[in-house]
Image 1: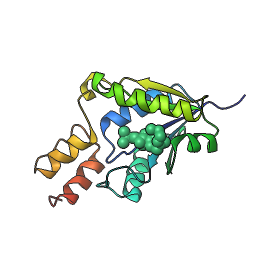
Image 2: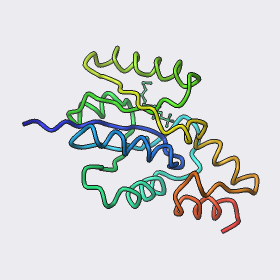
Image 3: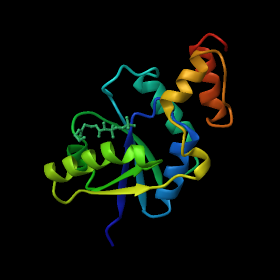
Image 4: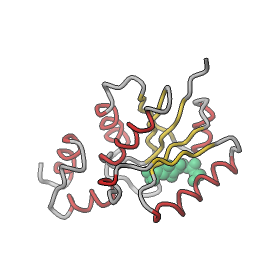
Length: 162
Ligand code: PNS
């Protein structure tokens, strides 16, 4: 039987417990889940691609059904290359909906078979975003309950508290 493969794309700058929550939910639904970090997000990332990959790889090292990868260019081209047509995205609140809908419909316009599956994270992560995490650490505080110990340590190093 053909493997069911889904792709969870994102900037993961950095990975948060909200992302991990979505990964764990998606992994239960598919044979293989590719967590794909974009090489050149629109904005300059705090963490280099190598750092983001390192974080993802060590976080999911124990889970053979979860693969970590990177992509550049159009997501639909990456999907085609991986023989997948399913995009996983987390939907935290209504505020996410408009941009996510735009993305899903653009991807479907570019490649009509593409399906975007929105998963809802645990309520305790519904307000969580990588940018807010970065801001908190940059301004001298920390939220170790919302990131992995590795990300907590790296954020402290980045902002001179390590
Ligand atoms: O974690 P993010 O920053 O919300 O992820 C956004 C991402 C990487 C999924 C999105 O920017 C993307 O798919 N970029 C690839 C370029 C692309 O395919 N653009 C056309 C569809 S929007």
